[in-house]
Amino acid sequence: MKKENRYIHFLIFFWTISIVQAQVTENPFVIEFSGTKISLQQPFTVSIKVTGFEQVPLISFPDNIKNFQKRESSRSSLTNQVGGKTIITYTISQNYYPIKTGVFNIGPLEILVNKQIMRSEETSVTVVQNTDTDSEEEVEKTAEISAELERESSQGVFLAVSVDKRRVYVQQGFNLRLSLLVSENNVAELDFYEVEKQLEKVLKLLKPANCWEENFGIQEIPAIPIVIKGKRFTEYRIYQASFFPLNNQSITIPSVSWIMKMITISMDGQEQAVLKTYASKPLNIDVLSLPVHPLRNQVIVGDFRLEEKISTTQLKTGNSYRYEFKIVGEGNIQSVREPTFTDMALFDVYPPDIENNIVRQRNSIAGAKTFRYQVIPKQSGNFMMDNLVFWVYFNPKKQTYDTLRSTLSLSIVGETVQNTQLVTSDAESVYTGIEQWDSLKPVVDYQTIIRNIANILIVIMLIVMIFMFRK
Image 1 (tube, rainbow, N blue to C red):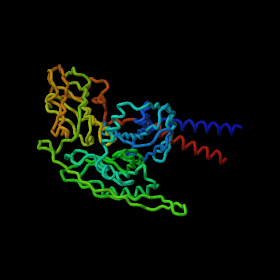
Image 2: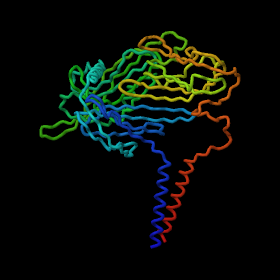
Image 3: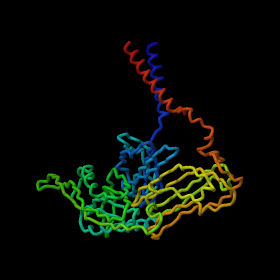
Image 4: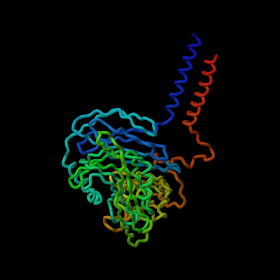
């Protein structure tokens, strides 16, 4: 009996240690829902956030949710650079469109992440009739149908490479899609055939040279219902990316082919599988040089706005303050450079922490890039910041260069200082007490220590239990 009690105690201890280790290991996956009160033309969205991975993991969302149809997906990435350390959070979202009105209970859903099953919580989605705004959005989606698709719409099944622009500036993005379109009147059954192998070959021809690529990361081919010239099709979107030309060389997209498996019925009623090849039409994109400007080779092209904030507008010389310069809009967010500070005699400006938030959805690349500075004023007075901090870009809609300027007005008091040190008046600053840090003293990572101790205890417990059972 005592021996059995010892076994029980060991098992309890082993279970406790396992719980400790589970608690100190952070879960890198978070499942979120959005669109829980929607109309028939709006999506219910399931998103999974992934932190700590260098590359986007393989994610498979459920194919079927009762009363909903699976359609397009989107992907965004949030990159934080703080103190020389880079942390990336990916958000992969899948849209499900309702097929009728009502209140529906959904979940728990099972999502496959790198062959690991993640389960969501349950949620409730309310679907109502369409509104006038929804109808306007549907008209806009129909207007997005490219000329390439319209020309091919007389066919029952066709392969199309389509772009949203045929004429762009250097550094201006254009969106490219490779799709197989199947008419609702098509009677032949089609299955995809060796997708990964075919796609690898096709992309070698499809991706234009001398362009920055922002891949939409399609992992599962969505079936998207669309209307072309009054005819209903299902678009199977195989690949999608936005490209930003790096020079003014014209871009030629060649014809590419795609093989599908067609299921037919023979005269004796037996199913037969045959391979059928579909080919896209080639297309050209003209690339225009930017107008002459001192920063022509450095500016980003797009549509942007400025969001900024500072810890306070009442400053004192010699103290440090946090200043945030956030560039928001549509364009090549990844390549956005720092703003320009013109008067370094007024401030000491320390290198910023940088945050990239890139959203890939619909037919565009959008998001924000945030620069968080620590600044130390050195002169007293009242200052308008519009000529002191700014960022230049090219606006293709206006076809001219534009400038985002600070709108802050600062009041600075105190004596003029020449040499500054990073002593902050903002208690939340990451630099608080930096001058008191001992760089020679090792930093203690208690979480790692606890995890290591837990691992050692588990190993010891396993050895002891094996020894006891053998006795």
